[in-house]
Image 1 (tube, rainbow, N blue to C red):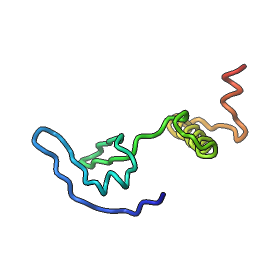
Image 2: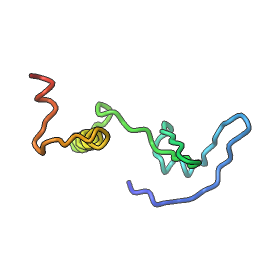
Image 3: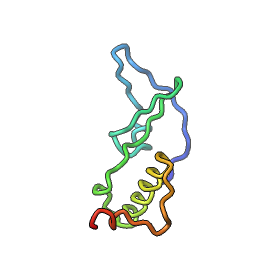
Amino acid sequence: MTVTEREMTVTITDDGNLKLPQEALDALGTRQVQLRLTEGQMIVRPRTMYLHEIENVEERMQAFDQFIAGIARETGVKWPVDYDIRDDIYD
């Protein structure tokens, strides 16, 4: 599913509740989201699914590769191209 960029105005109530329009919820595809606050900006993204929640094998493999790449970016580790974490787990 491809979601085009949209801009909409939402209101945060005095008690801190944020109500998103149905259009925004439909575009997110979920009601569980991650919220990031950075320098006065609020970024709302769908919650990252855990690997065991992804039913499609190809999508799960792709998510695993992204997970490993993310670890490498965060830690600065350079993983060998043929590295398989399962080898370390089961040794």
